[in-house]
Image (tube, rainbow, N blue to C red; front, side, top):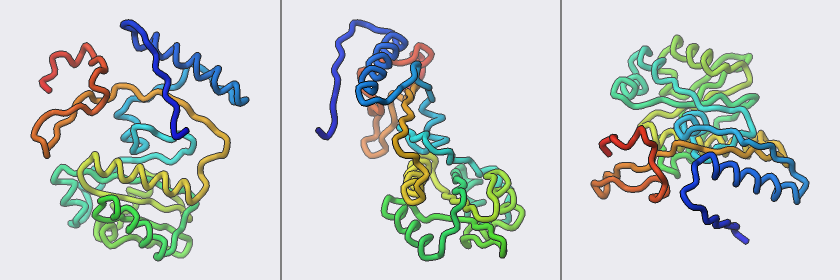
Length: 232
């Protein structure tokens, strides 16, 4: 089947009761296929998942993480990225280890993210022969480039990919690019399962198109007590 859905009828369970029940079931189900799942499962907040992985269903099987480079570009030489950072937009990116793509592949990746709505894709490529970068980054100056490489932990033979814009679309786009590079570079180990809970999802989000608040998560999910007074 395309997917299997399990419906569970419970009366007013707590989060911990529900998690414990589901974890016990998943341990037994995966054991039928010879896969060992250790409970309790790790947990990550929605905010951390988006900031580190660019996804609310993060693939944690490989250690490539999104980073925030906004503050670096606020101090950069006059350039587009500095203007965007000073205007309240964000610059996010990640370091791709042992990746040194040709210009053709970089153009392919740029077209890939543009098809999903990105304005473009910036990159920095340090090598033994020197360093090259996309013009939008080069214009930020050597000090900013060095700071990005240092924060990212990039060495010769690695690459750093960057994108600027509004926070949510940038995180989503960089998360998608992260998975695309994982597919291309075989970063994901075979036969590995990293199960986890993503918690603290936003209940509502504001729709500019509809000019109203709409459900972002399941509309029958219980809100946090701390949010009961929040002016949605």
